[in-house]
Length: 464
Ligand code: NAD
Image (cartoon, rainbow, N blue to C red):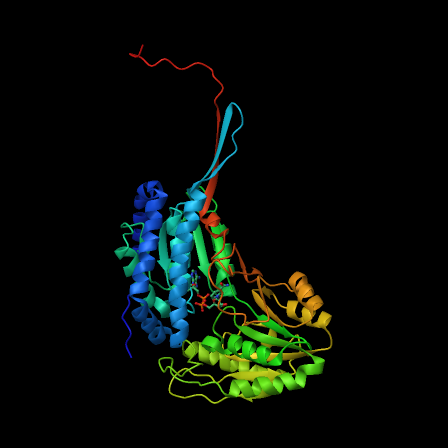
């Protein structure tokens, strides 16, 4: 089914876009903040009006089930409204005045800003990164993931209709490895905001660090990357709640959320009971086309992803026990939810991000071991704990190395300004999206100090 047709820009067109952004910067940086914030609020209202169409486009373009697409439109709207408010707050700056001297602390935009987005939240993530960059006064180029370029084109239509001036925002669909890399290395680009895989994020970080001929600044890079998120279930947990939370966190959008649970760490006394119930609960999921209202698990994004995930499943068979392998339709890129049990802590399937409906269950003897196994990856994005033991909850709060920790609930579905989102270690560099520090990354702080002790006035000619 053809959802839309897109073109991919050439390197020459990317160059033209960067020059157009430079030309537009002088006036956008001086556009008053209420006016810039107004564009975001208008964009939010337009998304509200086009909610059904945007959802439908995501269902068809990236195979996300209907209900999750609706939630994603809400998140995109929240980003617009929240960052509009946040920029108005920051615009007040700070005053550190003393007698005889004013000290004014204010923010200015950085310049030309490149956004590189992933396909798995094809509307919310590019919207958040783009509007944050725009409202702070930067001229912004948005490069979507190739497989989600149609929905991003709709976001672009919305920003144009909301009144974003020409050159200030540009949609630059193109191939990451050529056009994306060219723009990352461009001497006129001031900052790059990336969300995607660790591999690409690390490469962009390195490329951006190289000073190019003619470049008069160092580039700022924000890189939100992958995860290998674990939920710990201790012996005091409410198993009904834990099973349901793990199933939703692991298999929602076929495990293709950066926050998805891909490891469950279960304490010995309840291990067997938990695995048995987890398998039965997972078996009841409906696997099918994303557009069917009853579908809970849709397809994965494309043939490459399907093949890569199948390789990990093969690897899992060698490393652990298959507890469940569900069948799936064979007329598309479907993979049935798969659970491995008795997985050793160094296994590939618990160390590498799989990005599919594959869950590894590990057995541990005590809570200390659970935390140690939880922390034993390169990532630190989301984590969860099901427990009714206050000392365990407290220990997890301080010792579980994750950017977002969820206690006695699922670990996906962060809400703007409620669960600001983002990780550390190899899950990323940068402040949390949807949180109070996010916009600061797009701004350059400046301080102006003036001695205002009376020192006479310069005479102006012609005035008595
Ligand atoms: P990806 O890294 O393959 O691609 C992301 C973007 O980078 C795409 O737009 C791609 O075209 C571009 N790109 C590729 N090579 C490039 C290069 N050399 N230079 C410049 N740009 C280049 O990621 P994906 O498959 O689209 O998304 C899935 C990944 O994103 C997962 O690892 C997931 O964990 C991660 N993710 C993280 C978060 C978070 O907030 N931490 C959120 C969503 C997704």
